[in-house]
Amino acid sequence: MKKLILSIAVIAALGVTSCKNETKKETETTTTEMSEVMAMTDLSFGVRGNCGMCKSTIEKAANGVEGVASANWDVDKKKIDVTFDDTKTDAMAIHKAIAASGYDTEKVAGDEEAYEGLPGCCKYDHDMMMNQSGETKSDDHSDHDH
Image 1 (cartoon, rainbow, N blue to C red):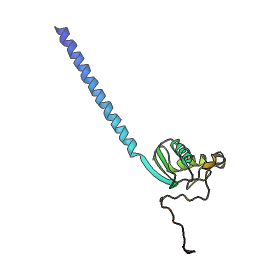
Image 2 (tube, rainbow, N blue to C red):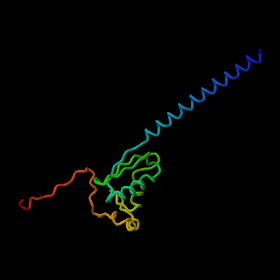
Image 3 (spheres, rainbow, N blue to C red):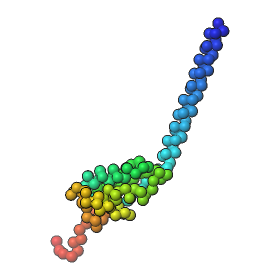
């Protein structure tokens, strides 16, 4: 009888200890996730490009930078929105990565060799405006009658 009671006590003690460890692990994970969310920075800047293929290349370059969580380039606005961990990278590293893929950003000119390797539809005008507002400019007809 003593062995039976002792066995039950040991099993119960192991069960309680096991539950406490699982609870502790969940708490640690939750704390870590909150820390990552708090370190994120959002950034928007202009990037020259033309089409969907440009979008793919530009976003791939930005997402290739360690610490970048997301990148979305808007074809019409010529603007990229990037979310990144500022403890792992900075804005200039993202500008440089995009420029290395052949595209001009507001702060860094695109690599000429990479630009020459882009498909024809991706060869943008180097003087192209990087329209961050998304507003389209209406044609000026003040110099002639309609």
